Length: 233
Ligand SMILES: Nc1ncnc2c1ncn2[C@@H]1O[C@H](COP(=O)(O)OP(=O)(O)O)[C@@H](O)[C@H]1O
Ligand SMILES: [Mg+2]
Image 1 (spheres, rainbow, N blue to C red):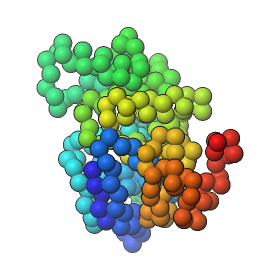
Image 2 (cartoon, protein in one colour; image 1 turned 180 degrees about the vertical axis):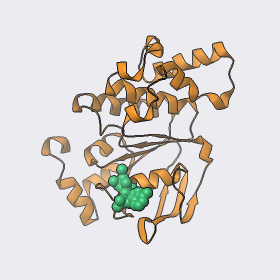
Image 3 (cartoon, rainbow, N blue to C red; image 1 turned 60 degrees about the vertical axis):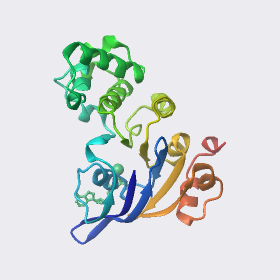
């Protein structure tokens, strides 16, 4: 998946400014930057939710899935978990029994019991809801999963478990992912490559340990200094 010279303008304001970024197959590319730097706008442009002014987004837009910050808002409260996950399978035209088996397989991929299929979002914890949102996105067999602040609304106590899920999905499925967070410690934990965004532009990109170990940009350094010591190892 390649994003080339992507630019998004809202009137005269440039939210995403000439961004070029490659997401290699099977890799997790982390996108980090403070609030307002243009991360979500980039994500929405890549998934076709916002029109872009210039540039190219490679790949089939139908094979790009997005998971959002607030899993409660992204799940229909009137639908059971099973129905929500099955909705993501619509493009596959499976017979009923196969669809049910596929829903169970997807739930187990995100470490949820099949028994959860009959529950409603309000009966689940925030972490469980986010797992359901991920399962639904995976059902579409995405070429690229865009995860925008997927742990930011969760209790700190369950954030780590969702990050470990992201890592294990990458291992098991060879999933390609654009993983977005304002928190460099979080991005560092899951990403092979880190891209740093500041005021709509990419100011630094490289292998995670290089960016974290020897940042070349002042803005990246300021993000690193903001990470509590314990998180830095
Ligand atoms: N639909 C929109 N219309 C006008 N401005 C927008 C719109 N969406 C986002 N912006 C602006 O674009 C900038 C980047 O926002 P956003 O992409 O949400 O940043 P981030 O996700 O990094 O916090 C912000 O200044 C925001 O106010
Ligand atoms: Mg955002």
